[in-house]
Image 1 (cartoon, rainbow, N blue to C red):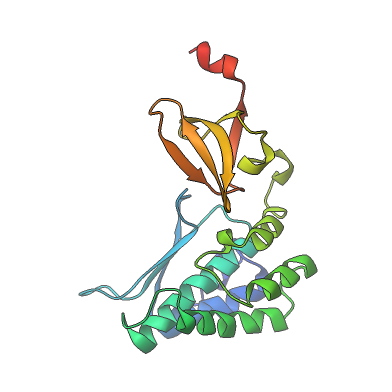
Image 2 (image 1 turned 90 degrees about the horizontal axis):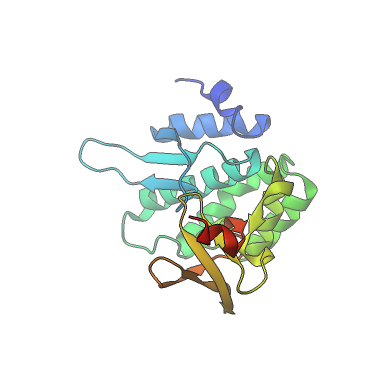
Length: 210
């Protein structure tokens, strides 16, 4: 049995590392610390042919986000062990497993008080991603490095412009239910953005200079 605690401590709270290391060993999971992905924080893949369980979590998450994402993905693994593909990915079975797997970390008081309160609220009805719970996501973002330098879509006035890390430029439009319509300038297509999607505000004059 290999002890992964030393590596895991670099990415999550120290007290959580031995527990996650044990989960990796007990499940025979291939646990990968992944490069940053804009579309997801983590990923679970069920056994296929000669491959066993595989979990990946983005390397650049703050320690608490990294841990919560890891627990999220192990809940998928446990749900697959119990039900294979017979249940919905984020159905009641996954929600029950997520709550049960989260419990030891709450008992150890690993999370700061404000995150623990946000998790308690989130656990009343866990969603497909912690990103979809605005209160939990905002609370976790406060623990990011340089969080005071981060801009999100909801911070911008309507009709203002912003760009993404890949250089695509948008104009913020009205809010539709829980997301904002944003117009991509080059394609003239509308996209829906999460309120706390990280963006880079720009002045329209900067666009004309290009």
